[in-house]
Length: 254
Length: 320
Image (cartoon, rainbow over all chains, first blue to last red; front, side, top):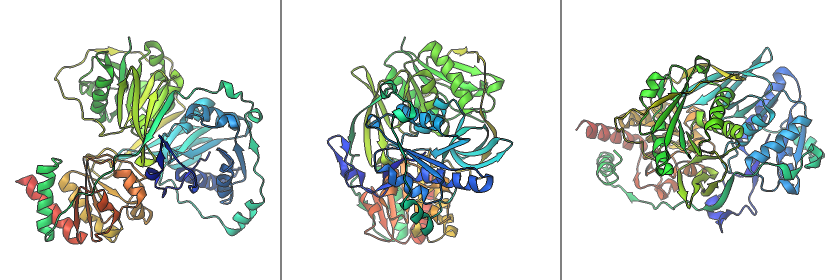
């Protein structure tokens, strides 16, 4: 499951206009955490066999995200789009993804732990709920034995290991792997590849029955600008002493 | 009655300090209505004693809950939520809270606002401020679903004061229990420093530090300050520091009281991850580095001279 997001180098703060983010003309990329998920899927296939199917919900441009990841070596891709999918909230998005997943055979679903746009981190876990299967989040290591997954997830100041029944949803955290580069052969092969687009009818969904948002976006604001403060002069030890004094007496953070 | 609940977090039998921050936010939201804390796990007596500032404490203490399970815990909590119908559930935007919140909300038919930095009642509605694009923009959202499940970013509000009073405890029974994903082991990192996601002070290093061996300088300063060690993406991608230390759009987004950036130029992805810090200090030899544009205090100089001097000055101030 992958999501297309604006390039992380985009100066989003300069695109906040009239309460929304203007994404006109941005460079779209695959959300980096989703890339770790795709990479892990490829590695699992290399070790255990099987096929890797990519799924992305989004407008026409999502086809490019799917092609980028197909070029890394994934087997199949499905593009989900319907005018009724425009502006869906995370619950409804998960419902659509679940309907698509039910049409595809799966033993494991991998996704990034969040999209680096809205930073919600909700859809993959909602998806696990929709499919009534377990999940593990912030995953940094995966192994398999006896039809179960041995998963390591990152927590504050350490790691948790989990025994996870399959099928399951795992969400990728940075550190899970290093993403490979597409080979020239891979890039050439996907150029001609046709990726099917499934609409609501194709996955047996009535858009009118999708869950409501539950969270209304009232508006997007530019974060308050920070002003450059003062430069502290002097030799290293003079500057250090002055900084400590300012942090203690002026900023009161020490 | 519309109650506000706090989902307390327990690790190694002890209450995690973020729970006290949740109580502060819950009190402000409750506006006189009852605030209740809920602890879920096994052998919770010690953790329960740490809970303060609430009108009641719900204890779901059962041996079957000894090992954490995302789906198992979520179902257990959702069962109680269905019976009691709290209006709001506050959890920490932590590895645990972010794991549980969506699953609890989905079971209970509610909605989640994740990783909020402020939450308030406006004309009877519940509104929250969420950084998006790692803080490059802020979204104001209204949580209409009930229960409203909100995960609060650490360090966003002060911890509640200890009023010395123990809240009345109500034990709640766990019904049928099943778990598909279960924790089998917890590995603590060798570091005794606080985690970058929760630390009140962070000292971060970038490429300007020159190499992984020189991070000892950063660590010494961090230890003098009682701080966490952070890192820029460049340094993490070069393998100098573990992934968990990365601050920025593809790492941790943090709001500590004090952020000290050493040898970090200030790429837009890094600035996004730390710009909400209360006070920012930048130390860099390049006077034109973008990091200085967001820093409250800047020292233009050689990190190999300035950082040890700063470590000494901090130690002297702490001892003096």
